[in-house]
Length: 256
Image (tube, rainbow, N blue to C red; front, side, top):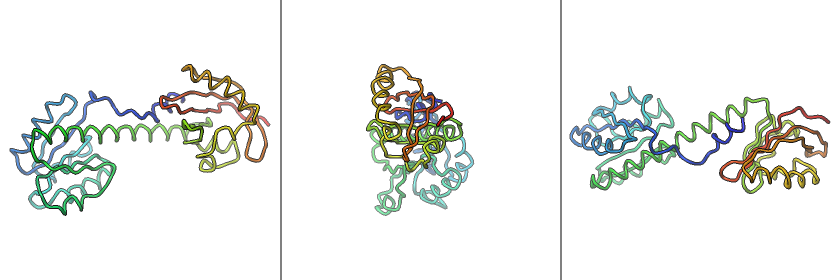
């Protein structure tokens, strides 16, 4: 479970050699072929093209990113984005347009999963487009991995909490919080030291945390303390994450 948390909370994006499936939509076949040719020069990008948004919609479940023109017969890029969102609410989407209309950019919704880019010079913007696609997709994949990991963490019988580098809880599952007679939100943002008596904090800092700093996990019995001053003992594992965060996992039943 400690390894699952490390993967779920990793900040690094997916590596650039991980394949990304892109669908490009533009009613101008010549320009569409130009986009596909430029993007296909990147080994990690696999490109599919469609001249009709309605046809592209049939494939959004099978791609990692959509790149769309704005002015197209019967619809426009914003309307197409709305259709895509009905099927895939967080699918990365880049509106790649040559239109100079100012209201297009103003009407484009601000979102974690959308980007707006003008076509301009192909030699310049194609490279920018590839970078935008990678950034959106890598972030999307990281978030999905984190969501799956946190779902698994909530489902486990173990009491698990993640402590940020500043020493405060950044994540607490319900099992962990219940061991201290609290709700997760009651502990988020509070120092981890408040969950242990003073003498136990000193012991953990001199033993467990020193072990973790040497890239090892620490396991041992600990005395925990609730907000009301009651204490219980439990088996505890402590591990470190790449960003300096700590993971506390209470694996044994509490004993008063």
